[in-house]
Length: 353
Ligand SMILES: Cc1cc2nc3c(=O)[nH]c(=O)nc-3n(C[C@H](O)[C@H](O)[C@H](O)COP(=O)(O)O)c2cc1C
Image 1 (cartoon, protein in one colour):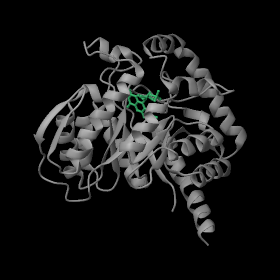
Image 2 (cartoon, rainbow, N blue to C red):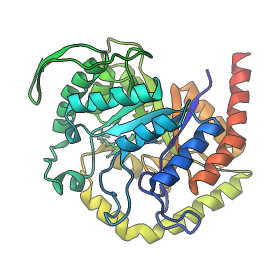
Image 3 (cartoon, helix red, strand yellow):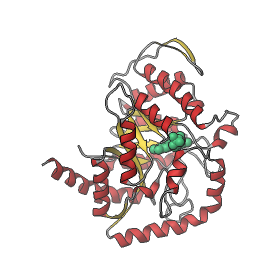
Image 4 (tube, rainbow, N blue to C red):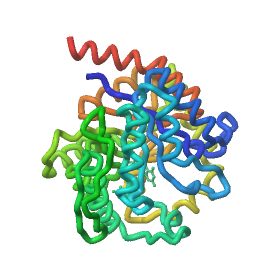
């Protein structure tokens, strides 16, 4: 099987340097609509729409709303998988399951949720929503996703736990396309691993080197699991060029631009729960990281053959889906489709022969 490729929607603007003349700030619906339609036409398999209610860098800046955008994209596209992120305390599980069920129908079986348990304290606290400590957020998320999953399967659900009391609730219509929409989980900590093994279909890993990814996959595979084998996704920021030298220059260019963001990043750090594993993962990188969720730490910086070979190595280690960031997004997304897709397909053909 060849790996699948997805793109992160531009929900809060650029993913690398925030103030880039080659990618003026744009988190609008119009930009995202064109970006996703083009991604689909180029052959990308998935789009991930991250969830933030206010822009996490600066609340004066625009922010795309995930679930209404997911519904609209479901209606406009025909093939690409639409993955919408969700932080459990923001929606009651019955309401969220109903929304997910509706988007599954609009998309005709192409919808998925990405369960994330949050890092941005300000997003909750400014709204007056309690921001529980790290493991408590996971305990809540675990009850929450159990209810969502059963409702999406069409079950009549009665559940009484620490956080929820649901009795005899059932959602209709049933899923005509498959058992239920897919459940992705983003998060690396021990409770994230337990949660995905118990309730997830695909585990999203932050971008990082192959040996870390291999260890994380082995760790999750050792967790008890009742359902079909778990699949794995990797987030990565790509800088692919004709030559390794040109890629290194592009990386340095973005790094220089990113220096302008020092103050914004410092504010963001203050809002970040220090218990979140993602923040520590970045810190192990010997070179500065461009992008979010691991970004360039995944090592997809190099000439076209190098980038394709690294993708192949991650794929051999168990990564099915690569969730990609670029900058400037649209131009680099096109380049990746033109240069890397055929190389990866050729490698898969050789492996299959
Ligand atoms: C692929 C991926 C996507 C994510 N998307 C979001 C998101 O949309 N919104 C958000 O607030 N956090 C997002 N996160 C960050 C998670 O909230 C954070 O990693 C996690 O909850 C912290 O838990 P951990 O300590 O288990 O890593 C994402 C993480 C990953 C790996």
